Image (cartoon, rainbow over all chains, first blue to last red; front, side):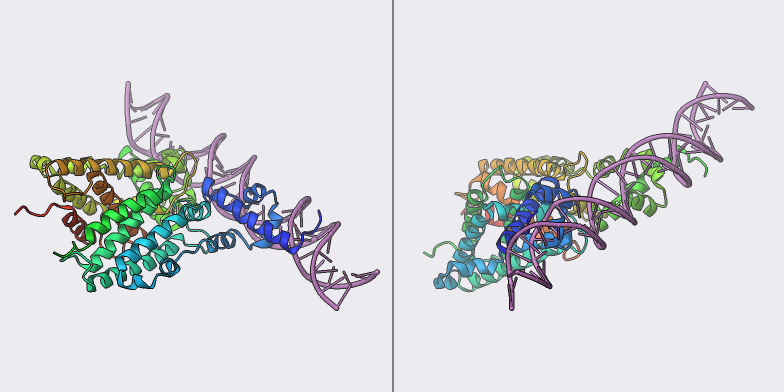
Length: 207
Length: 207
DNA sequence: TATTATCCATACATTGGTGTATGTAAAAGG
DNA sequence: CCTTTTACATACACCAATGTATGGATAATA
C-alpha cells in the first residue's frame, strides 16, 4: 500500500485513538488486544506500533485529549465578579463540567479510566483518579472557605466540611453516572442536586 | 502428598480465597494468574482448579463472603422505635456499614470490585455495582420520604432529592476511601460528613 | 479391610497476544 | 530527478496463561 501524507498520518493516529476509546469502553482495557483496536480502525498492528510504543503509551495519549482541571473551568467562565460570589463560581464551574462530560469523548474516556481499566504496565489509574480528585477537592474547600469569610455559608457550617460534602456528592454522582450514562442526564440531575445542596448550605437571606 | 481431610480441604478453600483477595487487590484481577494465587496460598493450580471452575467462579465465591445489603443493617440494629425516626435509622445503619467496611476482608473485596477489576468471562462488575447502588439508593429515598411525612425534613426540601443527595454523598465517600484507605478512616470522616449532611437536611426544632 | 471417592500435584497441549524484524511504495526534501 | 525517510503491512519468534489429563496417596465408608 501507498505511503500516506503527513495529514493522513495524523488522521490515522486520531482514528486509532477513537477506536481505542470505543473498544476499551466495550471490552475493558485489559481484555482488548492491540489487534482488535487496529482492526476497528481499519488498520493493522503495524500502524499502531508505529504511532505508539505499546498499549500504555496509547492509553496515555487517549487521556491527554480530555484533560479538564477544575480551576480552568472557573477561569473559562471569565466573570471577575465571581471572586465575590464563590458559591456561584462553584455552581457555574460544575455546570460547565457537566456539559463537557456529556460530549461522547469526555464521557467515554472518563468512564474507561474509572470503570474499565486496571493497573497495567506503568499505568496506575487510581493514582490518576487521586490526582484529579485532589485538585477538585482542594479547590472546592478553598471556595467554601472563601464563601464562609463572606458570610455566604449557613451559620455553624464548617467550611471545610461543606467543601468535602460537595466533593463527595459530586464524586458519587460522577461515578454513578459513568457506570451507566443512559439512566439519566448528568447535566439535568447534576444541576438539580447541586442547586439543592447549595441551597441547604447557603446562609438564609438576612432579615 | 497425602489427601486432606474434609476440614483441611475447607481450610485450603478459604486460604485460596484469602490469597485471591490479596493478590487481586495488589495486582488487579486481570493481571493476576491463577498460578500466582495458588503459590501465594502455598498451593498449586491443581488445588485451585479442584475447588473452582475458573477465575470467574473464584471471583464470585470471593464476593459471596462480603454481602452487606442496606436493609439488613437496619434490621440488625433491632430498635423498633427507629420506624418513627427514619433519619436516625439512616444514621445508625450507615455507621454500622462504616464499621464493617473497616474490616480488612470487606474493605479489600469492595476495593477489588470497584477499583481493581474489569469485565471478564461472565463477570460484569458494573452490573454488580449497579445492583448494590440501586438497593442502597432505593432504601435511602424511602426513608427520606418517610421522614418527610413525619415532618423531620427541612421545609421545602424534596424527600426524593434528599435521598439522592445522601446516596451520592455516601457513594462518593465510599469510592474515595476505597481508592486509598490509608488517607483517612471511613468511620471517622463518614460519621462527621453524615452528621453534617443530616443536620443540614433536618427540620429545625420547632419554636 | 477392601473399595471408592476425594484432594491435590504434575505434566502436557493449545492458544492468544506481544514485540520486533523485515518489506515496500510513495511522500519529502534537496 | 534522485535519495532518504516516512507510514504503514506482513511475517516471525516467543511467552505466559489456560484448561485438561493423568497420577497418587489417603480419607471416607461400607
